[in-house]
Amino acid sequence: MTNVQILSDTCCDLTQEQLARFGIRTVPLYVSLGDKTCRDGVDIQPRDLFEYFDRTQQTPKTSAATVGDYIEFFRPFAEARRDAVYIGLSEKMSCTVANARLAAGQLAAEGLPGRVFCVDSMNLSTGIGLMVMRAGELAAEGRTAEEIVAAMDGMAGRVRASFVLDTLVYLHRGGRCSLLASVGASLLSLHPEIAVSNGSMASRAKYRGKTPVAVKKYVQNLLADRANIEDHRVFVTYSPGCDPAIVEAAVSEVRAAGFEEALESTAGSVISSHCGTNCIGFLFVVKA
Image 1: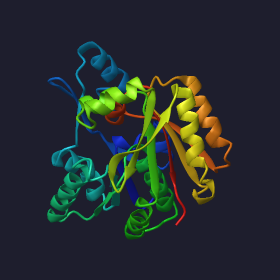
Image 2 (image 1 turned 90 degrees about the horizontal axis):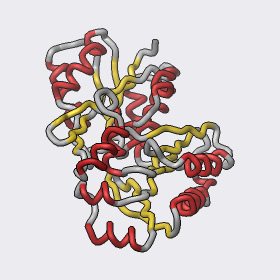
Image 3 (image 1 turned 135 degrees about the vertical axis):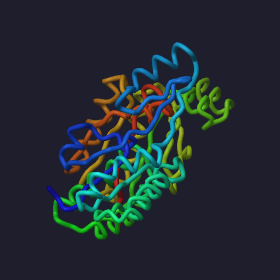
């Protein structure tokens, strides 16, 4: 067991195997289907929200874990005299990290021996996952919590996360893009690239044509700057049910670029509720 426990939330979109590799624990965020509120990855899976959307044409709503959730999540480590580093969804997208900090402060006020450090990833999905796995490596090396936090603060601005969408319907109905943009993209067979910039989501590019062609252009465009991408680890992350041929083509392009680890994961319910079906992204870290 390492001296420092690495923690995150379910928006990091790591698989159970990837979490287990470094003993990482996650707290579930919430997804609401009408008047029913579910815990991401516990009471609901992405396929459930896609079925709900198709049946009701209503977009699922997402919300952060509460301060009480975080107190319960952090307490065992604080009571066991273990330091913990929590890396959460961007503060510009959610109050997860703010709630985590409040919880950590309350536990500290109780005088518990273990400390909880909270880091704003400034990212989402496996953009967080890249940081969480690196933090797990540092913990395994015996680094202190302070050293891990400093490394994560330095890494946050270098993580690049983006996704190509097959539809803007989920973003539009979730209040994240205009109806005009949604209809225009549909009519013109455009696939927007949504990228994280300074902790927020923004439209960066648009790819024309059928989804397989658009995704190939998207990956090749990002790989054009391969010399500035760290070799260590990258992710291809996609919504469950994404066309296997599209996934295979994207993964093949990425793995052919010679990274030490080119990993796959599926987006959880929080990301899928905003990005919808047939969404795929390439996430990596640029060199310092």
